[in-house]
Amino acid sequence: MNKLNFHIDKDLDGVEIMSANILSQNTHAHTHQEYAIGVMERGVQSYDPKRKKDKYMVSGDIPVVNPFTVHNSQNLDEDGFSYRMFYIDSKVIEHISSQVFEIPDAARIFDRFFIRDHYVERNLIHLHHILENNAFDIIQKQNYFYEVIAYLLKTHSILKAHSPSIINAHSAIQRVEEYIHARYSQKIELKDLSKVACMSPYHLNRLFAKKKGLSPHQYLINLRLNKARELLKSNYSATEISHQVGFYDQAHFTRNFKLYIGITPKQYQKQII
Image (cartoon, rainbow, N blue to C red; front, side, top):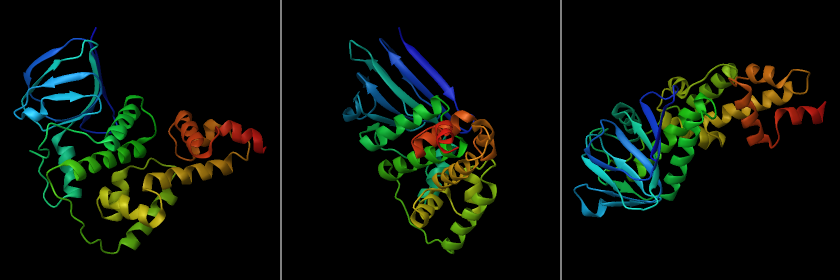
């Protein structure tokens, strides 16, 4: 029995994801109005694009299909196949490409039907799991999505990256740092930090990491967790603290605390008071 699950994350405009486990399926020739980017996780799938070398996809291959590209598919594995997909609006890709390249070209960014890149494969699967399970908070999801897609475009698109000079980079990073410290307990999005820095998210992430050793969202999470550690030395509950330091629920607070500190907030609090 074929199983397809679709999901839209409310924190990412213009992005729809899908996971599929297919036992038997042959599709008619069709197109997508969005960019279709994904990962083949199992099996063998036959496509019918114009170029013969793009005809077969196997486990690990990454389909990168431009909008309105005609293709069909056929299952070639008796055990079926499974894959994960991102359907990304052209405007989203155009926005990211405009930050990375001199000339955005949302009409045709890829000149191949699929690519093979283990680093991109791992990160696309991880990103898909995060969105599918609503793991982590808004700035982490936005930042990770942006970083993965920007890297994919930079390394596998037909466009050429540029490195514009950034004026007053030091003061821009300082403004972002001050903004984070003043508002760490509030909802902060990547676009907010980009506006404060007066530069694209792409360049902000790289300049901030070069200066501070952490990306902006990692810096924010670390600040929240350090504030939380101080509050855990009091009698506040983990639930109260999670909201005081900016995590929108206790589950996200606990997940990040354990990821960075190694134990849960309750375990930490029990050991120190």
